[in-house]
Image 1 (cartoon, helix red, strand yellow):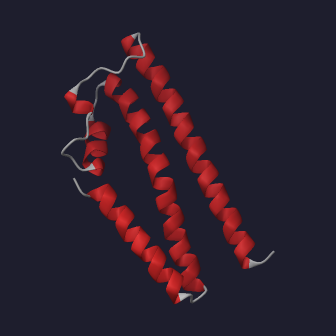
Image 2 (image 1 turned 120 degrees about the horizontal axis):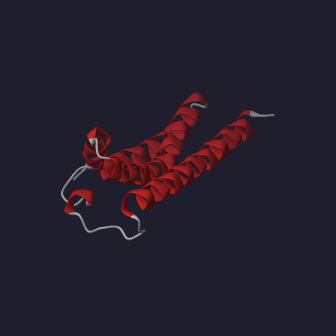
Length: 124
């Protein structure tokens, strides 16, 4: 097996694992939410909106929450975050892979993509 097919296999496993973990967290969060509220309707609580906040700060606030209802929201939010971060991890691995191959052109391209992804996740 050559290095390229091994890299593609690793990327495939990461993408599939990210989707599977995300789906599992979503299902657990939905069940916990239903158990807490007795319905599937998401309330329009402003504390659950990310508007004007950094996504990572929003996650940190949910993790620090002691309320069981917030844990359901946390699990669903973490599921979405993992789904969003899965391609991010793929880009990081691509940078490493192209750097090992000493392919400067693709290292620069994937670093540019990584910077754009990082900015889009970190900026309020």
